[in-house]
Image (cartoon, rainbow, N blue to C red):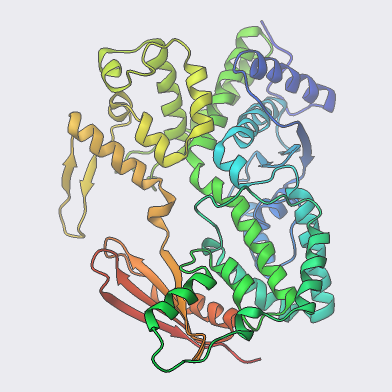
Length: 506
């Protein structure tokens, strides 16, 4: 039976609405998804490029790096060296789903199923997103941020604002809180609170620096040091937070810019930890929906072939010796694991029952998936659910590479090998293991006010020299005094390397 969703390029908004409604029937009736209201906006390729350049946000303050990215991506796109995504989806309430006007109606249907329902459900229900992001007010906050930084540029000059933004962007990776201290801040009325913060800063003096004690003779130095660190909240992993609150020479408007960049960094932090799960959830959702649409006669055979071709390219995983191999495809891993979970729940083998006794044969794979989408991040999801059957299907194995001419196979397809492969795969997608562990550990309040940072080196992976020098310079410019960084071995605490930077005087 030929469906009303064909493979042609002609479509109108009524057709788009009908496609959305049919997707919704399956998403709510069969998959039992829980989503934010969806706002679909059709944009041009140039608008898509603009969204690319400003970290995929519909509202963003100005910065020279965004223009550079736009020029680069546009040149690649115009010369056919890079394609554009079919959609961009924003973790907001309502959930914004931007679709390309060049898409066919069939592709728009896929995009709605993938982003409007799959990503949308994940954003609303995953614990990392609910804990660390405020979907209801992020767009209002970004509008405030854009307006505030534009006002700063008018008042203090673009060069001065760009210096602060350059430093803040260099530290974005180290501008997030990785451990829950409190719920994500409510970003509503942030403009009014910013005014209050500036007024308070003008009325008071920084007590931390006004009450610096003298070095009394015979003072108990360990006690003094411990008290100083306690007052400063050290050690502190969130460098942007520390500079915003404690840097002695920053002006109120500079602190507010650091706060803005810090909130943006925190907003994106859950996405870094859930690439496999987020894309897997969206891909599983669109695959289920388009198959059901075709079975129900709403999707023509030609449209189905078009969408299956797109789906296949998305989940393609090149072999390790394929020239196209560049690592594990998160779409392939996430989609494969989620299909495998449904299989384990509905048609388990004896091996599945041994490895997954809690879910094997439960009969409701979709319920298990919804629980997993809510409660896990990539690392824990893989560590919990990657099965021996999928390891064999994807031909996964673990090797040891010490840089020599030969590779040592560390895990094969036996029970111990499966566990080793699963652990190695989980570590591969663990953001914490791939970002430097850097903390502010002390500051000499009495002497030269030098700020001390520490990088705990794991597995001998040191910081790259040139990039470290650039970031250290930004730290010193924000702090206003000398900054030192010690790279220490995580097991022995031996000092492996020292870095230092002094602030530039304008």
